[in-house]
Image 1 (cartoon, helix red, strand yellow):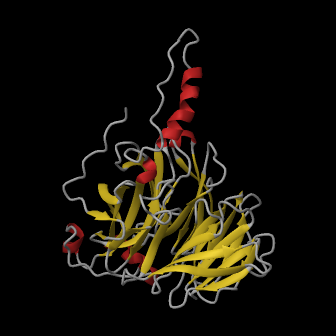
Image 2 (cartoon, helix red, strand yellow):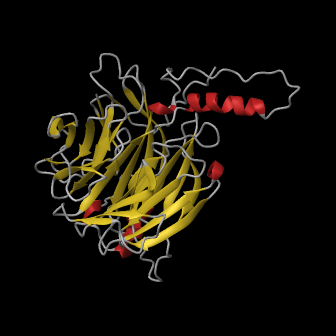
Length: 424
């Protein structure tokens, strides 16, 4: 039998579905774990058996069912926070510091990167009761983005990557203990100038959302406009730089893989440009550059269920859906009135839905009708209850909603009211 879940730490925040969880620092990123360690352990068991002595007659024990919500990694969500520190005394302090809340999208000068702190929380979401319980927290630089690797490492562990304001990428291992164990830390490439002004690491993405690989790639974007491509060694032993290039003249808000063609990377920046790069043939020039957005491009995601489909979002309040076989014009243009599309996430199992964090206009669930004579979109749900800038948003990968639920759980976080919510 699996061990019971660990008790929450003494400083844990507990909330219910629809309730606000206070994150102390300003919340700007949330990501549900996509790795089921039970399924990973079951897949690894035959390998372990075949590598044992041929004279052995013992069989690996059967892992617990993945339907057990009391111990599945699918019930974990990571939440990242960002806090601007205004004095040396504040930098030594904790959650009660008299810090200044500053929007990360304001892109303060890089020399202030060391004056921004953050924290990553790990929450366990109980699918039976709908309770969110903190299981772990780690102090970090201010977090700009988080991404789980969509495949287990070291047989049955989950791997979380974090992008922070010191310009570093940090990898954490998570197992059944539900703790974040730092695996390695990768500084910005090239090294920061002598004045210590490292560029902020603004976003990251993994290449293996659709097709697992023994050596996944990771791409990161930075506030000085450069992009870095890295490779994760087998068994997550090292993170090695592969390519680095200057993609934009302003803040590169986002970099993302085409999940169906891992050699293709998309980038968006404050110069209003959206670009595509074929990293297999070099990065001297992009495959395409688009100015269809009229403000900074801050979110991009390849569709994990439909090949050739891509979403982009911008400060111009427009969500554009593209067919990657024709990047001259988007398939459709959907506006989230009153708010730039800071993050967008396609639904894990329903190819027609996506979730946006649309800053001043809250969170939107958008229905995309690909089968209509003319592809169309419709906002089917809007949540503006946070009362602050909507930045983080994600869908749960757990297969079942809570009892009586109307749909898959989603997590959202907003900035100035330092809050994280779990919704049906």
